[in-house]
Length: 351
Image 1: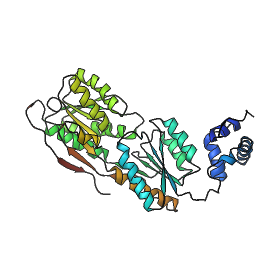
Image 2: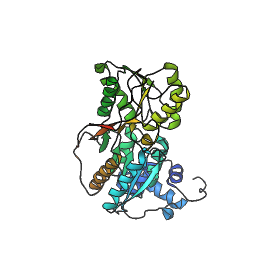
Image 3: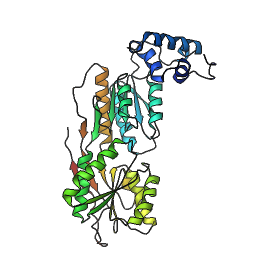
Image 4: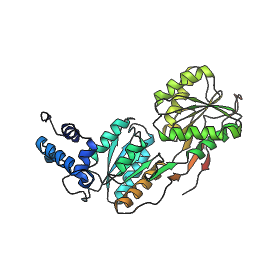
């Protein structure tokens, strides 16, 4: 037995002392039937010696409802999540729940640690843009009802946007504007939408006569876009699609610093339609996602599961997107052509 840790005893202190994983400690108290009897007894003894049971937030049986939903996002500072969080909050309140917000800061390790820590407290999880592996997410889903957003995951209820439709609309716009060469600035490799968008680019570009190049991955931030712009300026692109709006805005600023004008020389498109896309000059053409609706949909589904429903769906629910055409796109090599303003194109269905 190790020395008793200083300060409040955590699930990780118990796991280390007992020689088991933190998830095993969590299951011992939340769902004891899922842990080997000898292991569970050892964990309980260690927890008692360390004083963990006296500091637990939730002491009731596994069937006790807390009316709390855990909402995990990859970066709470990213404005992409503001509408998603608000959507989950409003929908949860209508159903008599509150949300407990956690931020993984783009780290799958921190994400899993946070989920394990709050698991005894919540009735279910909503995971937005997870950075964990599929197997790690399935492990969490076995312990608590869960819905994942922006991630298609077999056997786990999922809500995604129409990435393929959004990419196709962006490419069709660029083709109409006579662009035949497009650079894609990739986001985090662990981000499922990044892979989905790049695959869609490769699938749809050939039919339109467009060649696609990939730059990155970079952080999904303004600074990530700036770093990509330094590489892009050496290649003199005429059209750039960013993984998200923050990257796209960073690219715009970075290109302007190198003397490349947007949209006269380079057209730029983003994804998400955050508020910043309408505030920058030129305003950003982007693929808009219904984030508030996604959050509300996730809440209704996870609460249904908590109440005993079992989804038979094997495919993710796909939310429609809209291409918002603004000032950052214009015809190739025609410096004096004014870009289209205020146009909206819809992709996907209302399903």
